[in-house]
Every structure is written in structure tokens, then in C-alpha cells.
Image (spheres, rainbow, N blue to C red):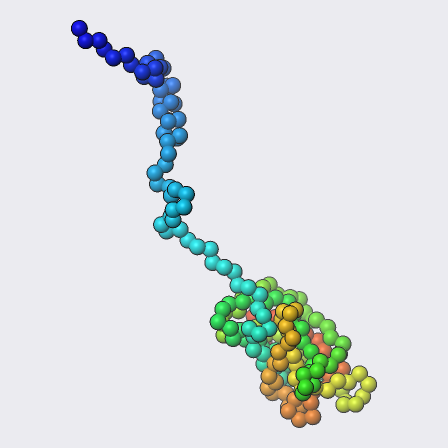
Length: 198
């Protein structure tokens, strides 16, 4: 006579469980089972996307400046400082550039300088794109008290830079006797050239 093999303890317990508890036990077993559609440690998941790095802050050396003369009123002169990203990567600016009048040797002329307007949100500059800033100054007579005379404006957008000169255009005095200033006002970076600081 052949004896029937004894059933395992687990099998005997499953047979004694009520149907509802058997369903729950099976569900628990499925939840606890290892998943086969997830990548193991060290494996690469196909279709995963890489995070795109946000633009870094622009450096002064990334930008080329042009100072474009516009109409002023009386002794108040105005210009637009155009800064173009001439680097090969995108970068961003916000707030105001540090602007100063300089002499031909490159010496900075100390003048009362104020920031006008309200800073816009961060402006992303793709390669070859530009941002603009309105510049105003009070002209004066050369040699008078508090009057500085220079040939160009220097701009700085990062604190470690020594500054770069913006090429003047449409400002006749820059090519003649020099630009005279007794006070300088700098507007924030704008996304359009015609934007007036508010």
C-alpha cells in the first residue's frame, strides 16, 4: 500500500481558511512579490528623461555692449544700453548693470549714480539675443564743478568683472569733445528696446 504524502503546513492552512481570507492572502502575496518591470539598481530605465540645466548668470565677458543715443530733453540726455549675448551658451540677467563713465585710458569717473525703475523678472538670453537698459544723464559744461568728461560708458553684470566698454553710436559728443555728465541714472534690464523704466 502506497501512502499519500503529507501536505505541507502552508497548504493545510490554506485549505482551512475561509474564502474571503484566502483572497486576501493571495493579494498580499502578489503585493509582496518582486516586480519585474522596474530597473534593478545600477540599470538604466529606457525612456527616462534627463533634467535640463537652467541658464547660468551672464558674465560681463559673455556680453557685447552698444550705447545707442536717443532724444533727451534739455540738459537731460538719454541712450539705450543694448547687451547682446555673444557667447555660445544661454545665460540670464536680472536687475541693473553697473554702469560708469570712463576716460580714454579706461579710468572710471566717479559720479552720483542712481538706479531707476523696477527690476523685471529674470531675462533668459539665448546666444545672439539681447536685453536693453535705458540710460539717462545730466549734461554739464566741461570744467564746471561736479562735471565729469569721458568718452564711453563701461558696464558690469558680474561682481568679479573689471568691466567692458559699450560702443557708442548716435552720440556725437562721444566722438568729439567727450560726453559730459554731472549725474547718471540707470534703468533695469528690459526684454524690449522701447520699454521705459516704471
